Length: 602
Picture (cartoon, rainbow, N blue to C red):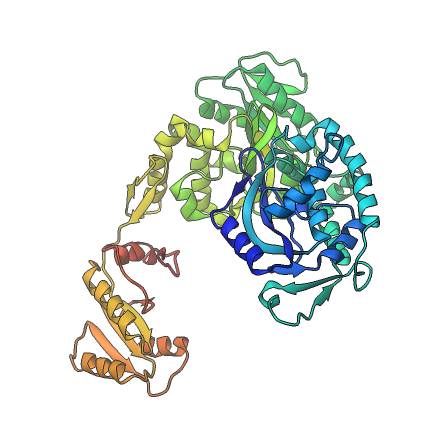
């Protein structure tokens, strides 16, 4: 466990301030051995959504009715040393409590006083695979010790709870009020409701991210009753696309190829046929095998005309494992959305045949694709259109399919590219590993440059950090006037700093500044606006409103007086740090497909 730096101080302050409190606990994150935060579960979900003090005797009644530890373990719990010295020897005997030692001590403390639960996350608890509580003999001991604990709870004396399942409590901010007027909460019902929610969530009992992800993936598959309805669903489509996966086996890896072929054989929607480009032998008579040539893109252009029965081709590599509904989801998307010519999907990695590293991609994003080939390599194309376009350009090597995507965008529009927001494929060649291939890095800039040249867009491509990533500077023949609009109402100090940084740190030459005084009240501000307006500068103009209105109304007033081709709304609290900031905005604002652009603000 790891305590956050404020944990002990905050808990000690609380324990010291309330003498009737015997135990202070706080919420904690549960993480796996790789420090991935796991979903909340009953053990760390908390009791109420704020710091609160709970009547100890009432909590014992809850624990008697629901034998479960909602408080956590020793780590992250604060108690008085004298109390621990009094109780611990009697419950930690050689034949005493072991598996439930921490919770048993908490029970003893709550027989004497109250409980404070702090709502903030103050610690992190790691759940390693071989931890003490998960060992086999601990489960048996825990079962025995719950029986002992239940006898202790039944034998307790003291004041009864207000009603069965109810607990007296107070927000901690009211705990020092005298006399205390306790609130009441049906904690048993609250926790039962949360238990129902937790049971319906993925990963509530997982001890690792791998378990969580595997459980999430299993939920993405069709159940047996659902599979019985698939045929009826498929028949309802306007048509049933014939999909041919094309597997490129560059390494001649029989095991990797078998992974891919087996996943295709288990599909909920059968492939029309399967093509494999490989130099290894393939025994499956249903597979159409071609000897792999050095230039697979050129070879694909030769194979595509031979696939007369195929409507679509799906590019895969040996070692790709398709999820069971992958072809079904792809076929349904093709059948239901007219005009699709290319489809990509989310994907994951296979590490020792275990599902890892999911990559959740956005819908088609023009600028992101110009930055790097985020769509990945598992791409499906409409075969006839691909042939009409001349197929793949081998000059782009690993990125030949992405050249096709750019030509589709240029000719048919971005609506012809579809994203399936499901993990359709998991691969031994992970997404990050593919992006690191020399064939991807070397051709990334050249691919985008060719696309921009075809559409007549002047540009300069920069690489700020990684050679794969393209930062595109769009070059325009003119420098249009930009009207920078700033509204203010008495924020004189902030406004002066903003104006100073703007005038000092803006190298774009063609701009004007329009400041709207939105009915300032202070004499100092009114005097400043008056003095600035009397300067009579064309570069900086002042407009004063007689009555305060909304910021939008003030901006509209200035926009009506602006001379610029472009309007830029700037906060009076903004400070300019990068001299070419306005050039950067205008590089994008002048693109015909862009309607609005903004900077990154820290």
